Amino acid sequence: MTPAIGQQTATEATTPKAAVVKICASCHGMELVTNTPRDYDAWHDTVQKMIDRGARGTQEEFGLVMDYLFQNMTPVDVNHSDADMLMGILHADEKTAQAIIARRTLRPFKDLAELEGSIQGLDKAVLDAKKRMIYFQ
Image (cartoon, rainbow, N blue to C red; front, side):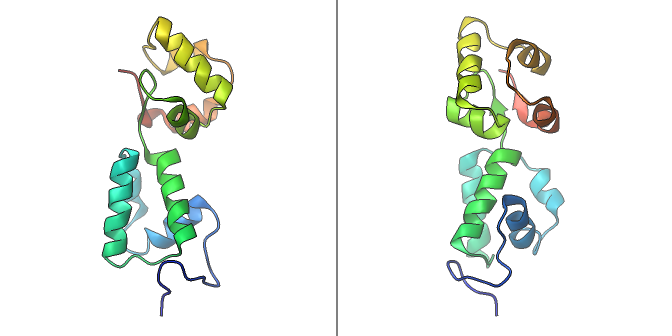
C-alpha cells in the first residue's frame, strides 16, 4: 500500500528531479511535464489536481516537485519578473538579479544574447538549457 501525503517511505525521493520522476512519471510520461510550461500558480493547481486524483508522496516530496517545476518548467519574462523569480528560474544570485533589474530599467533586454552580453554572473549552460522558458516582453 502506498503511503498518503505526510507518511515516510523507505524509498522517499530526496531531490527535486527524483520526486518528479517518482510522483509524476508513475501516471504519465515526463514529456507531459516537460512539454507544458506553466507559471507557478498553474503548477500549484496542477499538482493539487494530481493529489486529488490519487498521486502519492510525502509532503516533502510534493515540495520537491514544486521546486523542480518552478526552477525548470516555469517561464520567465526577464523584463518584468521580480528578483525572486529571476533568481529561482535563472539560478542567479541576488546581485545578478538586481543587475538585471537595474539594466532593464534603463533599457529592456531584446533577447538572450543581449542578456548574456550585458550581465555578469549568469551561467550560460543554465540559460542555454532554459532558453525556451526565457522570454523578453
